[in-house]
Length: 302
Image 1 (tube, helix red, strand yellow):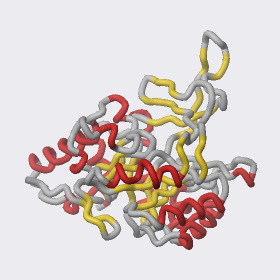
Image 2 (cartoon, helix red, strand yellow):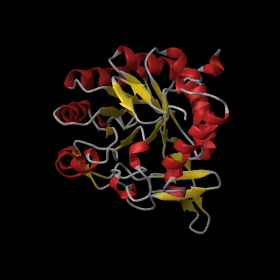
Image 3 (spheres, helix red, strand yellow):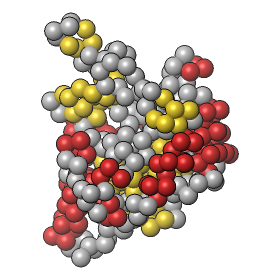
């Protein structure tokens, strides 16, 4: 049998597949679907220092090869998460990634400081959030803005810090390098792509904010390219995500150099997707005589 374990930032993950933030609740919602202990981890719903109700109007819209969402980071806030949701996540038997966003650097800092005092395994820093003090431009667009928020969060926590990059970044290699220089222990990418949809009957945009985030199979080739670029730009682990729906998709990211992968939109199509994809990776490895993922990680780059 192939060994699917992944050594990641000092922790041994059970497998290479991690449930992506915003697509898996807090994990317990899927606990009856399959054994969550086969996963490399579960990412929490995106958290902010203070709770948010999220966006009004339409929130989800299916496309022919993906899903556009305008949830708006609806969440109960970091303190509520620590008191209520985190204990149940810790009981799942897999690694816990706390996904943290914020509208200001101070919010990020305070949220990270609160999470630092908990048993979460990793903080995944979502820098795709809009910087309210800079006209709403996301921290993840410009490398200098990203570097500032990452360095401030790094000073606020000793937890392993995974920075989640936006595909809207002006330059992925430069952004990746800036985040690592500022203290990121690892990177995950990509977040959703900015997209738009029109309601033909109303003759208006589907979403109140006009633009929203596209995920799903349509983005996979572009996400794979960006993961390839990030792996080549830094010497820390990179988690790849974007449109993964099968074990073969996941293996492409691993062969491009990803340490692990995250699965998101596929969970809405198949609630057992993360477990199925993990099993598919194992079967492919068995068929090809691959005993350990390290044998093929980054092999496409050689």
